Amino acid sequence: MAGGLFDADSAGDDSSSSATKRQDFNREQFASAISSEAAKSVFIGTSSWKYPGWIGTLYDEQRYLRRSRFSKAAFERECLREYAETFSTVCVDAGFYNYPQERQIEKLVEAVPSIFRFGFKVTENITVKSFPKLPRHAGRGGQQNEDFLNAEKFKKYFLNPLRSFQDSIGVLIFSFTQFSRRDFQRGRDFLPLLDRFLGELPNDCQYAMEIRNRNFLQDAYFEILKKHGVAHVYNSWTRMPSVSEQLALSASKTTDFTVGRFLLKPGRGYEEAVKKFAPYRRAKAVYEEGRRTMADLIKQNRKKSGKPSYIFVNNRLEGNSLQTISAVLDQLAREAAQSA
Image 1 (cartoon, rainbow, N blue to C red):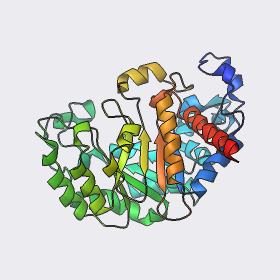
Image 2: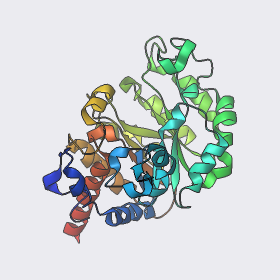
Image 3: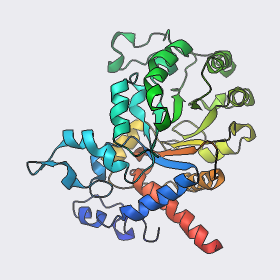
Image 4: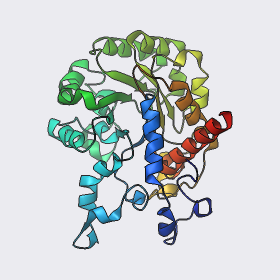
């Protein structure tokens, strides 16, 4: 991908004058590199897709003009179709907040080509041990979740709406928020519940577990995932070891496919990242270790057949996931040219 996503002289420029420079984005070249990796069973995408900050790079503003004015409603309703002209996967983070509805999934699938695969975060109604005190939880804040790791509820309310669209569903991610001492005194107290839950799930889906407690990353945890054919999500997060450190754990490779989620640089909080990076037009803080590890994951998981691997990149990692991904693809292209 010679030339990369953005000109070097405009990197980090959030001024209005950078809008013209952002037109230098070669979307066809970028899409070709993404497609090439998907052909090798490595699907690379972003966390969600409705970002107005990507207009002028990934998105063409002209497609969302209504009566000569940009329509936010039209953009949010229609931009997935344009996203899928470049990417072959996306992580539907909205799945974390509500059970999916069949009609909603149908609309998503109708907007993308047949090769496209959706990753879904499983609703917090299944993965939260106790509800945090947030406005969206209304009267449940601070209460224990009676449906935590309830396999029957998961199958009925999460899996069933997806069944009609099985060919378009990639990986289902159980993303656990950080457990407190009130939830589990010790990490091993979590394991019997996880083992029983995974044992009750149908085995025709790709599942992955994302843990946010670093002390849970023990052999016993990985052994349960391996027993059930479930991937550990190599996740870059505030209080987690870096992805490279997680990869160094010999037991962490639990399946023949890999899932990586590059969300936050370790040590950087969510609110800090939002304040620093929004509206996500540019990469403002390059995380070199994260980029190197992402490149390693791509190289390690290329194959001609078998279950695909997934790598999802969030804007809050560096400020703009498009630029992060482009830099990694550039690095891989340079390495390939040097070894040719």
